[in-house]
Amino acid sequence: MSRAPRSSAARRFWGDDDSQTPIMHMDLDAFFVSVELIERPELVGRPVAVGGQERGVISAASYEAREFGVNSAMPVGQAKRRCPQLIILPPNHEKYEEISRRVMDFLRTITPLVEQLSVDEAFLDVAGARKLFGSPVRIGHYIRRHIQETEGIVASIGIAASKHVAKIASAHAKPDGLLLVPRDRTLDFLHTLPVGALWGVGEKTRENLAKRGITHVADIVTIGQQRLSAIVGQANGQHLYNLALGQDNRRVEPQREEKSISREQTFFEPIMTSSQAHKVLLYQSHDVASRLRAHGSYSRTLSLKVRYSDFSTLTRSITLGAPTNTGADVYEAVCALFDQLYAEGRGIRLLGVRAGQLSRYDGGVQLTLGDDGRRSKAEEAMDLVRAKYGRSVLKHGSLLEKDSEV
Image (cartoon, rainbow, N blue to C red; front, side, top):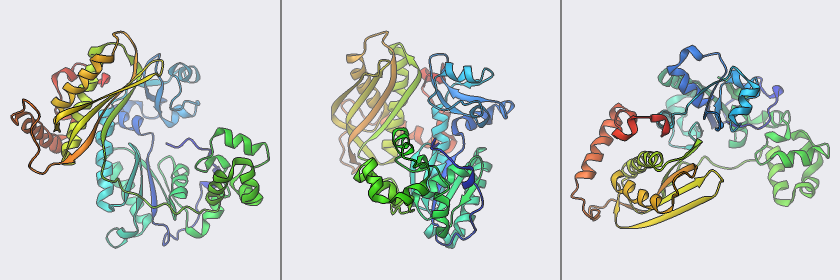
């Protein structure tokens, strides 16, 4: 979710002409928390957050918690001081990603022009979906209703003529809303906003502009591009001035063919033992391998990424004798890399597995050394079961003891 400043004046009805507004931004409201509340309905309406324990950080906060000033990336201790009654739940990233995949797959049944930005947000271009699904506003209501009925969570949607304005509109539609900005009302909408709402305006730029009395988007248009560029530089000045005029010609870009497939996880509380790390690597290895198979790809180069509690980061790679797409092979390789560089007892904040040097299956790929095909067939069978019953239905025994570690 965007943490850019908002304007109460922007959250209103701007008109109903959606004939020239094919761009949509969908954002799942308080996604992690909303998913957890499906199984904990007794916590609805209370300040709830997803995150680590005493040494961790907040990953997501309910709207009730945000009223106390609790936000994502805030240390847990600070969050509890602001809201002593805050209920903190451990994260379940596998569950979040499973629901995210279903939502994104549903969006692609409406239009192939879906650009996923993160686990909980995406751009859509619905210009080509009008014949089947109706106007953009009608499509937006359909998306929100479907997600709520099938997943039990809420999506907010912004609809506009450009990606930039649609994203700002979705932020102002929250929580649980839809906001249309007709093309001919774009400037009226933008000029109600603080400058911090523009893409690319961080805290330092905002403070720099505020010192010169430039606090709203309308002020940027008033002073002109030349003066703005003198303050923030030529490139930034051109960029911000164009956005202030509503000029954003970026297209919705569906995901291109991947050059690599990776899985990373940041830990709210550091991992302190190699056995914990191996469990995480087992899950990540099989997740990466499953996605390789879904893409019809094999990988020859595998990489491991480790970030320690002091934020130092190490990466190691290995090139295999033959390409693979089985989780067992990936796990064996990345564990060997991990064991070479890890010192027992050193806190780990992030682990990641990446499969690179991808090749398509053409019937002539050599099996990995020592593999007679049984590994591949077993994991393909697991893919079929998960596709039918959900990704969480099958797990390795070592992952069942404590899912929250993974």
